[in-house]
Length: 301
Image (tube, rainbow, N blue to C red; front, side, top):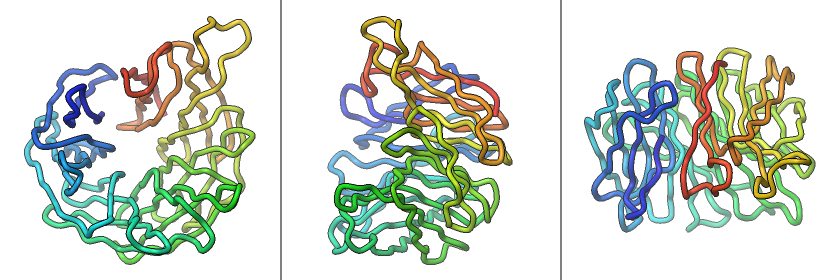
């Protein structure tokens, strides 16, 4: 997992079976926002340098040791914060461009040396668009997010095939925060509406029928058609006074909900990842807010 420390320097923490075993501070970095691992090969973390002018990519080997750090200058206004890797030298990054009008939605391809960025404009009539997650299967990648449209919110789905310029699809009334692709055609997205959480099959960029649950969902991790989504739910009646939220884990198979579990020791999950059939959900320990500490929950997909 990645983030930053109390000195506002980016750091990378290696977990094994949900337990931190190694932490590395990356000099010259301000923060890392996401990390993606290729099974058996290693991981790549994406962040920013200390003055927010360069994208920083840190590559770790399969043992968790940092083997390279790259600082890359992007076009002014472009920020890439989410990453999904097929290998440690072939990754997609997603983000936005605030210096164009309408604002730009970006997918970049990291080939181990340079990042090539493709951009499409945000939908007409929307504001504050953002991409919250990206996932790849082979050379097909899907990024999801949302944008305000008046008093409503529309979900955004950006799909790129073969690292080509992406195509944008809109999923009305959804806030999308997580995506996990299981093939070049099929992905599953997670998020929420005004009334609760959603898990949606996404086929070639188009959102299907949503499965609805009570918890708001912030991330999703899939293996074949089985997925676990993570988020938060209001603490039930009778919970300790300071417990405002519980972590929530929702299991779906082929887009249909099979179980919902509330985790009292978590104050809510902000993301989830799977690796080799196991998942790790990340969030705040009960009684703390995200950013002041982290706690993980592990299980099987």
